[in-house]
Length: 185
Image (cartoon, rainbow, N blue to C red; front, side, top):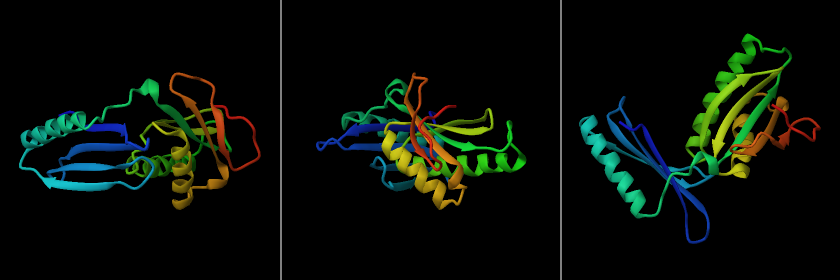
């Protein structure tokens, strides 16, 4: 099965909306999630007999989305937003790895339920923890990251956020808890 279908379109007012669907094998449910990008989405679950029935619903969902003008946004048209933590050691400690897992898990959920993209990966480099998020909307994602990190009590005082268009290597500083005017990975 195809995993998750995630598509977007701008409505008549120019507001970016999203729809996504997947088959939750644990609960044998077809799940549809939709809403305005950056806002908590609405979710509908449908009990499904088996994977073949779920595949049929996924196909129908994809067709309906295409008919309604929704489409995937290619990675080349999205943005990278990096949540970065300053660390005390070059390679991070066990405590930093715990922070990495907690922050990644919180961000995966927080961004997904708002149509703000995915957490692609995380890495430790040069006394920094970088969590890379691929998103269709930089400003809403920066705000969502700040809200999420604060809400999860994940050391907001060490957080910086940078952003760049996909394919670019120069990140612009979007937020820093400490005085700074540049962002480096």
